[in-house]
Length: 339
Image (cartoon, rainbow, N blue to C red; front, top):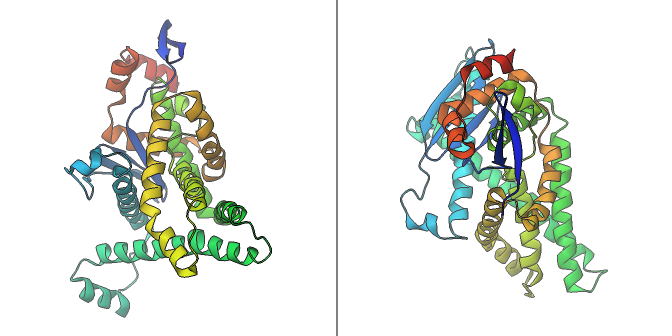
């Protein structure tokens, strides 16, 4: 049975569940937040002049309408790919507000336009995704394996080597996060990441979506992409532990081929963790929430304002609170809350 608590709304005490699943999710972008609700998504960006620009569009995904999206452990692969594609698209949109329009097109720009047939943005997005994927594979898959192979000269226990490889993978990832967090732009990105989580936590806890309420909400959320990546690494430790082949090259190939399998399993875990408060999933989610202390930072009120704009563009949170928590929002409450 779900836990319950009491909340005061408009001076009245109401009984409610601790959390209701909202179905919305998103990510931080350059000086903004992207929020997605089903097939709709919105990107809200704080422009250099201080105004907030909001773009609303549809994204159906690569397997739209397919029954594959209903198959557990398979749907996670497509969700992962869609998150990468949509995330990069949102990042490109947000960065467009901070490009120097005064710069003249270079010869490289002209060549890209010719090669891509006038679709240079899409072409660059595909190239960027490919390079990023190869970089991630090399850094988080191949490098830990290579280091563990070096250690195997001194440690003869194959089971221990499999565990060492997994631990190295996690350490490399955490080190990478710590290094990039030293960059000013990344620190601001992490603050917008915190604003995104705070908005979702605010409404899933049954609170009206106001700056004051969002600022008081937690910046940690069980359905975060950071937690998903950590699940991927933990699941890989378990799977690789049971795979024993002699060929060095074959071991690398198997690790690459298992990436979709690992992604599918990890997605199901994080999906369940975001929908239940069962103690087992709270324990499983704990390492991911700890990691989010590195990948999210506390936002200021101006960042929260941007995140709220993104939520409201694709999600009727007032109707959600009425359906999930049983009360309607009085506009006077919002005015009093902001005051």
